[in-house]
Image 1 (cartoon, rainbow, N blue to C red):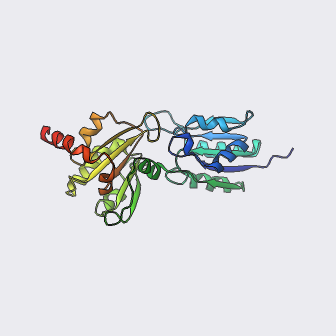
Image 2: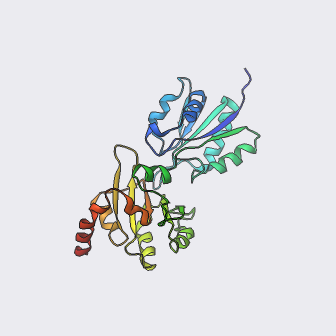
Length: 256
């Protein structure tokens, strides 16, 4: 039987396996090979057929990781030798998922491709916490920014975003939280609401909320760690529990 190479980039959503799309499930069921990331809930792999080859290619900060060049090569090699390869990514393939780079590489070999979107953590986790990214009269736009560039620096885009009233969601930036806090303090935004969401949508989810002046203490108090997203903006105060935090926030400020 002639092998027909094909590559599908699939977004697995923010963590909860119930948040994957039906179209994504169909692609997984039809896959000959699945290359999956660290943030993919492995329950989703149960949709694959028994003969499917599943390969972990996760990339995590401060851990042994699979290089992007090697992943690109695996995608093409398996497509040419096995047929349909699903590249399964946490969130959405095109929101800091390097999906565009993988398509560019596959197209060099004239391999047909498809993309199935997923729910990005930037929108999905905020929605699950009932934090609106936009709100009439409060926030007219939202920025989704990487917390760290390829050379490890804080993104310059964040330095521009702080001058606006936009909601800012920082992905892959928890290790730089102290730098981000200092950036907002230097802009005079000491009281800006901020939320940290770790392992969002999962049973192990943790959240810390506060203001720029208090969030480092709140993160420590709530034992928040990686992986976590950072949400900054007045819309965070729309969270149903934010008002309840006022007493705790005043107490935290009094201790500083």
